[in-house]
Length: 332
Ligand SMILES: *Cc1c(COP(=O)(O)O)cnc(C)c1O
Image (tube, rainbow, N blue to C red; front, side, top):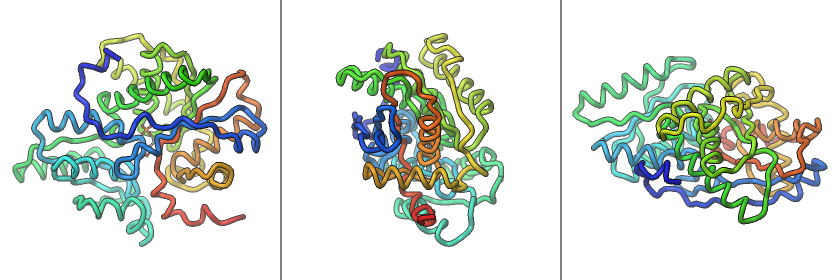
């Protein structure tokens, strides 16, 4: 833990989040022994994985005397929702760039978009496939010219500092597993902007808990995603002055469950969302955790979990987006 003690951190998440057995889903799949780490229950602003990153990022913003926080994401970004909420909570002006991924009324007015409006976040829309980083820089410049001290949070909160939120989560998970006598053979989770995976690997290694992590991609092929996670991991380890703590080979990503693209529903995702809801009473989301669980189902059915330990699924949140994908509830 001492490697992280040098960094200021707010208390925003309800943690430790529960680590629960999924006995019904285990039975439905015929094994392996499935557990779930409930980071959808981090509490603040409907929870999710970004709350942990924001404990470090908003602490840094306050430390630097920021008066405004800007970020960027898709219209239904969970990251934007949690970041705007955290900025509001600490009295900072909250503004965001939103990429118009879909333009139907439901998508632009319900789910996370509705919540952003409740927080009073200023939203600046750009077209699909626009350069988000450039639009974010423009927004930061605009607010600076209005006299604000601007703190810019990158897409997904995945700066090396933000990723430390998942180093904390990795240590937390290791402590829970030890206390419960659980020896997982793999931790499975959705990987996007890479901070969760890079941080988790760091935290598990800091805790001396040797368990493989498998990232299921939501937007890229496996090789491209692995390169992205490795790049960030290197920066995280440099930040905490522990280069070499995690070998590059520990980064493993599977890009087989993305489907046609980021945020586009797949039948396998819909099946995973419904099966998890009906067997465990747990809601996944259509963009991240539903696809990650589809990957877990496929690995289980193909007999690819060959160790004898449990498999832990890290639920990273995102359920507000369910409300803009009503077709997921249809029975085929
Ligand atoms: C952002 C997000 C992820 C991906 O986490 P990264 O750190 O961006 O890789 C997974 N699940 C949900 C629900 C998210 O909002």
